[in-house]
Length: 137
Image (cartoon, rainbow, N blue to C red; front, side, top):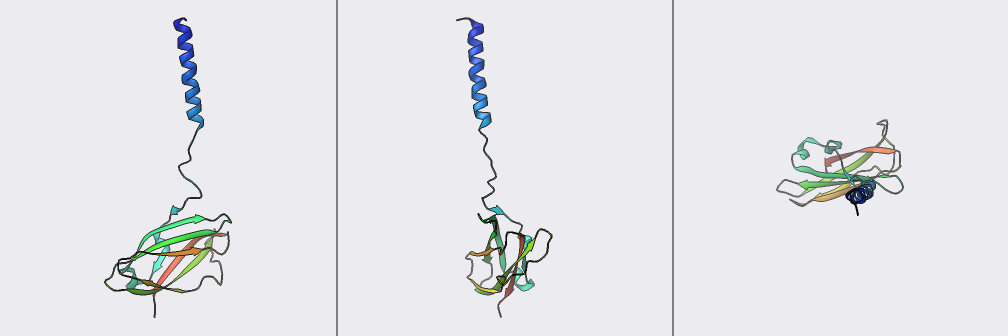
């Protein structure tokens, strides 16, 4: 076997391997995987803002196209807190989506224990949200 023939075979093998690995691409961003959202969309009344921390917000779309949100809250004070919260949903143009599902709910926050608050948009046209947190009466 000549040196040219051996070099040609080696070149062919390297080319096939390069094509095989080049064609196998991995998408590092899975559109179905939850994405971390901007915490500025959580509106907290002033006295409560110093005591309740937004740890993390995750959002994704369901198979039906509904925006799904999960907000992790942490009570940083030295006492348990009772709060009310409400999700407000907005469309691509920033207009509020009227829905009966956007009502106030009560939540107990224990000291130092994270709590998850979940919301599901009422329609696939919801592209964003605001979460309002206020002290319970």
